[in-house]
Length: 282
Image (cartoon, rainbow, N blue to C red; front, side, top):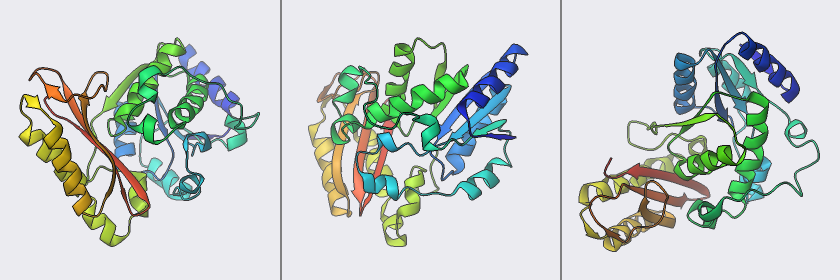
């Protein structure tokens, strides 16, 4: 396990590995690691010769500065967790290494429709920030395979679009969401929940499960309305409950019984914003 802080050192190291015929997998993270991150790393190590894990809290993807300032910083604990995995390289760059000319006036990516809905609508600028950091990380690592969690469903679609815009041959693999025993999707943000809030948080998973169990061809508006109402009564401040085409995220109000669907939720528990999703007819 090697810890690298400079992108040029990382790029040179990976180039040497590739010159020896080794394949590279990449797991980008913002730290505060949990079992879902470790699962991605272990999967990468099982299918790639070299696995790189980055730890970088990206300032450009936070549309709320307070959210950025409160993001958990647990680097020592993260490194201990990674020491028990088969990760090959840990990339922990400072902000100036990723954004050598500052974080203003950065490039803009044409993400089309994906930037106008759901996370794109409620977090303006968020996906531009995601693309700005991912483009830099991807160019440093040049991975053969990129591994991300399905919990960030829309983000996975954005990164897939970015790979196309960058003309990279890297393949993206979105692995199923890992959950705690009560169904709550694993997330670094869960660390910010109080004990009382943590006890309420699994309601999101319960609501998604109910949507899936009640799904039937026809109008879906009542399903979304009932889910929103239940979350509201459970202490959440709901931003959206949506049922969309799983392939392009276009909202679906009347279902033909065949189109692949995904239900997506974003809601605040106190000051903590939680997201989750569930494929409905896979």
